[in-house]
Each structure stands twice: as C-alpha cells, then as structure tokens.
Length: 544
Image 1 (cartoon, rainbow, N blue to C red):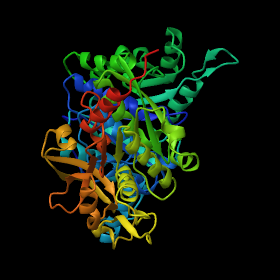
Image 2 (cartoon, rainbow, N blue to C red):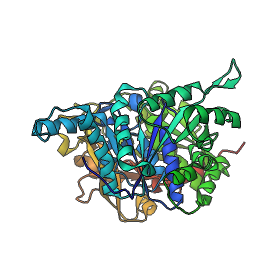
Image 3 (tube, one colour):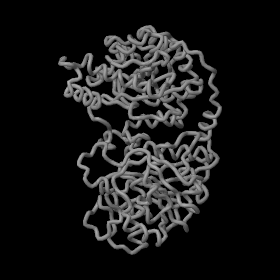
Image 4 (tube, rainbow, N blue to C red):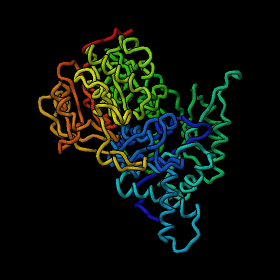
C-alpha cells in the first residue's frame, strides 16, 4: 500500500438517514472557507456504485456527467468542487467501486498478489486508500476533503468506510477528521424536530469503528440550544460541533456564508491543529448579494430533452448564474422540453423569453423540436447559445433553411439522410465500447480574428473541455461558411469546426465543447457572460 506525507490533513464527509442531503455542497463549501483561510484544498468523491464511471449512465439516473481536463467522466459533485474552490481536478479525484474492483482484478490476473487469496480486506481497502495517497502526492494540498457517496448502512459503501477507518488509524487523529451530514426532520403532526434519525445514523457509524467529529444537521427549522445539546450528548460530539444547515433561500452559494456563521471551518482547523489566517469573504458576499438582489432581470429558455431533471444540466444553470451575477442581472430560467416544441411549435414557448440555450444530449428524441427552437432564435433575432449538440442543431437548421439542403441531418439521427452535415468523428468510426471512448477532455481551438468569439475570449487560442462523437462534416464547412454560418473557431489543424456564429445577429454562437465546465462564481465564462449580456441588452424584465 502507498503512503503519503503527514503534512497533508484529511477530512472525510459522510451522509446518513437519506440521500440528497447535500454532502457534496457541504464539502465544497467547507473547501471554500478553508481556501479563504489560505490553505490549498483539494476535494475528491468516492462513489460506491459498480459502474467504472458515470459516462454510460442516463442523466435520469445520475444527472450530468462532469468532464475534467484529462478527459475523466466524473460525478456532478466534482463540478461543485471546481466551482467552489480553485482546484483543477484529475481522474484521481473520483473513484468508484467499479474502478476499485477493476484495478484489483487486473493486479490479480498479473500475479501481483503473489498467490494470496484476494479479499476485500486488505486488497480492496488498500486500493481505496491508495487513491487518497495518489491525490496527496499528485496535487500536494494542505487538506484533502473526501466525500463518500451514498448513505451510512448502504452495503456497497462498507468497503469505503472500512478503508476510511483504517486510514484514520494509520495517519493519526491529529491528521484526520470525520464530518457526518444528517437529517433532523420536522414532524408536522407533533410540531417538533426529531433527533432520533441522527442518533441512529451516528450509532451505525460508531458500530463501524468511526466516530464523527462534526455533525452537520440538515433541517427546515433552526436548532435551539437544547436540541444541539441533545445531539451532542447522544452522538458523542462537542455541542459546538453540532452544525445547523438549513435550506438556502436564494442560492447554493449562500451555504459557505451560513457555515461560516456556525464556525465549522474554525472547528475543523482546531481539530486538525492548523493555524490559519482569518477568512475575508467580502468578494463572495458581494457575489451572493448580486444573486439575491440584482438590479436587472431577464428570462432565458433552456430547451432540452432531460429538462425535468434539475441535475441533468447542473453546470449550465450554474454558469448562467455566474454570468448573471457578474452583470448584476437576475435570471429566470424557463425549462422547455424539446418534444413539446415538436408538437406545438417554437413560438408558443419562446415568444416571451429573452434568449435561447440548447444544451448537449444524445439520441434523436426531441431533435426536431430543438431545430425549430434554433430556427426561431435565428429568424426572430433572439440571442442563441448552443452547446455541443446545440452546435450540431444550429448547423442542421442552417443547412436546411438557409443553404437549401433539404433533409440535412446528423449521422447520429438519420444515417441515410441526403445531406449528413454532421457526421461521426474519424477516430470514432471503429469504436465499439461506449464507456470512456468519446472525444474527451481539454482540446485546443484556434479563433478566427474579427469574429464575436475572438472578441469574447480576447485570445487567438483557447482550451475547452469536450465530450462528443460527432462533428460538422468537413465536406460542408465551406458551403456553410459561405452562406453566413461563420466557422469562427477550429482545431489547430483546421479539420474540426469548434465554434460557429452568425454575424448579422445580436448574438448567435454555438460551440462543440462544454464551456459550462470552466465557469466559476467570480470568474464567469466569457461565452456565458456574452450571452447573458446580449439577452440583457435586448430584453429586460421589470423587477417586482
């Protein structure tokens, strides 16, 4: 088993009672606070499911797939980690049971275990601990915050918890703490909060040999002193380490400020024996205030196929929020199912919005509705931003209705279409495995001077994260460009169209990559900033 320096401190975040308590946001918010104390913080996520990664999972099952610079397809919580902190994460920051067992079995087949019987302890638990050491060695942080997916008691999570117990023992108490996120429900019939679920959850942890150092209580009502004292006594934690975490009224970005009021960062630093500066959260407070009380307000439609699931387009919604706050502009996001536009037309859904965004996706469901939405935005001069599939949609629409290429389509949706203006990437033609085989991670794009893309980026060369199999067909690029769909960004060798735009339009840009993955609260992505600015300039709603 690997080892790493004890100069790094470790925080493990677990959850109990029910899922969706916000462990990832709690971990990310603590990371924010510790960074403001001058510490280098790195976060990682351990997911107990047996998939190797979420890349082949439906958005309805798992939400969005978040892509890192190195091409790793990861859990959406890593998006929170990168947005809330300055971290630039790698494949080592997300581990699944599938990866663990894949590595263990590969080593067994090579004979690395020297004939030993391969077991959960020590072989699986060692592999889990190795991933923590990998991050410590690779990224050299002051603190690693590791979130354990699922809830205490899940059978698939037991090896991870055992590995954490061993790790804490090996590294020493002054170097490792456990934070448990739990639920304190309000029973309406009784008119009171109940601590028993928290007690039972902590008791389950204790039975596994883990004693939480801090308990973060998700609750709809404030915890009074007596309630905190009760949780403290029955869960064996100091009363000041019982932390209240109520639902945020306006934005998830309020959470670091609320946890700061509870002094969770100070408690963590004391437990880990860290001397740090006092955090100055002024810029974060200003950012949150612009979200809560903006001077302007606009309405933006997101036309998608997984629209009913909030987490399917999580990074897009957050990137829009960042841009809106930067421009002191509140956003009303109108989620529109592309299939509804297919049935009833674009005007019925888009006539009252200030801008249209079409996100990524796979498969042919809802595609004609998205094409209608792109056409409506182009013809009515509504600001339009297309992301990944949204660029392919814009290309198909333009080919059909401006270039006159009747029946133009993507090879993904109709391989027998007369004009395949979007086709499979050359290096994807022989790919048989679906997982981890797309064009993934950071790729370079060269921008064409005198274009809106160049103006927004203020650079001739950019790097962006990709996740796709299809591209604008090179055989049609010149025809599209000559007809007014300017290819303003391309791969360095000129073969792949990465950005298209329309010059005589207030704002019509579509990109093959995913800019939403690089947006941060006080550093909004230039494309989102430009899009929201165009929407603001063309249609502002009165504030109530």
